[in-house]
Image 1 (cartoon, rainbow, N blue to C red):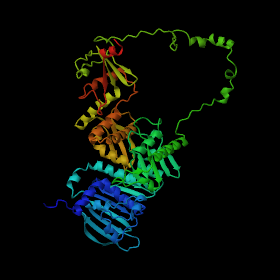
Image 2: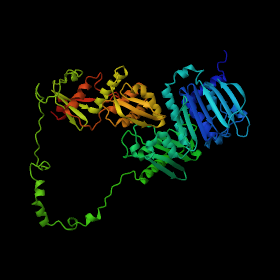
Image 3: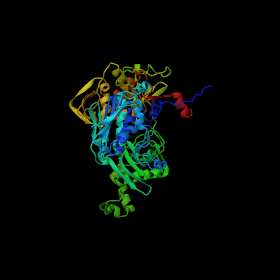
Length: 606
């Protein structure tokens, strides 16, 4: 019987290895940017076309490579960073395993031009499917330019699994931000389809954070700096009011390498305990610097997951450093219990409260006013309690009766019989109590309005657009570059929802009109919150259309704590039960709860 095991050809082995390292265009962006940093560049430019599917090019002014090195760098496991096994435990560079360029060459058409300062001519290579097609001398500036075209051209199945251009560009921006954030002393730029999205001049870390996350965080950053014999922690955290529902503005770097660590994120959240709301996340950009021997960076192909030798020590240092920073900058509220000296000197404080003075006080008109019966503020110390009775529903045609709501309850089960006209009341400025014979409903006003708006907006996208109210004085909104890319992608779908918005420069937009029920002057805040909702829903991997529908519905819905009039409550309940799905929000939370008479009697032991 013939032998069955054989060695794979190099090009197939390289494609299999590439699957671990190059999962999407953003993976290649990360590897190429990190190589440019390792080359000692102080200027790095990234160009992408069609979200990296057609072109990814990185140009740097680093040290460049010789002709021999330029050829060898595309071989698997070829690296200038590792000589002995001991070197693996002292890594301070970004790349070290020699897989990136070999993986890229296996799944794209690559052209590289590179020159060292001491060389008169540079080297040009063209590689396709791991095969060198051309190599020769070329005139080139000092540094390296790598252009990879037609990603996954030879693996159509992998290309078919890529998302939309907007989605893939978002991933590219995320990787770009992580590298640019770690090295504020380097100039970075990112251009997409010929338009520059980021232009980041070299500067301080705080300047880089503002460049990347937007001017709104300029005055909301608190510096963190703690130095110990074991590790150093530096960076910035946001004041509690910067906390958002999304995790997008959280960055941990260990020895300048971006990492993901739920464990360390928990340390940050503990430091903010009782300072931010539940399910919200503070902004932070934190750098941990420690001996490479204390950390293993080689546990994952993307190197974004690492292991600390002693996680508990790092956790404790991170938590303590943030608490110290917030306390040092007086973020934690304090109470002043010292009594003013002028008050301490008053007669009423200094002199004793004698029986004579007590008698005089009790006979005064002020004292008697506050203790007489029938006063609105009087507290009865007796045991008698007033007897409360519920009003009967008004008869048809009675003055003050609410508008007919027969249509409201057609979707309820038959056992829940409701009179044609009902009086409603609001509880805690959050719930609407809807009475009936033998039962009542408790409707959550915000959840109900979310469902109503969701179905109305879905109809708008299906051809029944919402009316737009044009602004007499259009508002201009300036966004962080990443948010500007997100909004530009959403503009076509926002228009039928009533939002008329036009680009105005690189990261600015003009709000020409909004839905009629948006309060004038509040357009900018509404749009910013819609973007935050979109980022929140994108974290749970919703389709783009569904993400936008839920985001706009959640933002425009009437919030808990809003006082509603009789007519507003009636309209809300009426609209809720006209919905296709009336008992749950788009996210699955209940819009109302039913309480039947039998349930109440059981609760009271009847």
